[in-house]
Image (cartoon, rainbow, N blue to C red):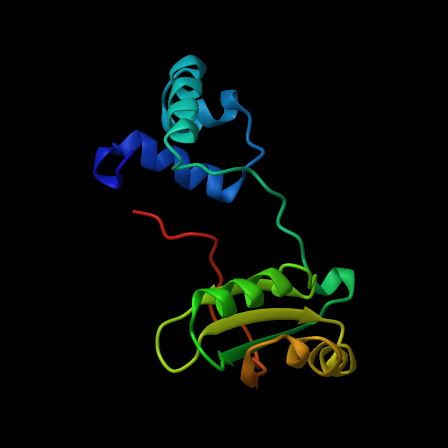
Length: 155
């Protein structure tokens, strides 16, 4: 489904679910002004088309002891398929790496790492990250505070 095929009710359904993904079909139908049956049909269509990709619980990393986020830019020694695949396979094994993006520009990857503090980050860097074959350089940045947080952009 393309975004242009979403009508106002679809958009209202998505906005409501973004606020509360556990909302019942009955509550959702009341919020968007339709009966439960058409809301359920629309949900199934949005899921089948890939607009809704899943339902998750949002977890406070700090409450689990991972109060520090660190952004790490990684440059590989060469940007060939083998090096990219090798790096990506290695990164999948690191639970501290919450997000990993292949980038354009002068860095190849951008990672968001969640750790309990600088000691855990240092261990990750020295013991594992710098030892990944083809990593040429790493640059890290520590955010001071989050200014805006979002899950996805909405129409």
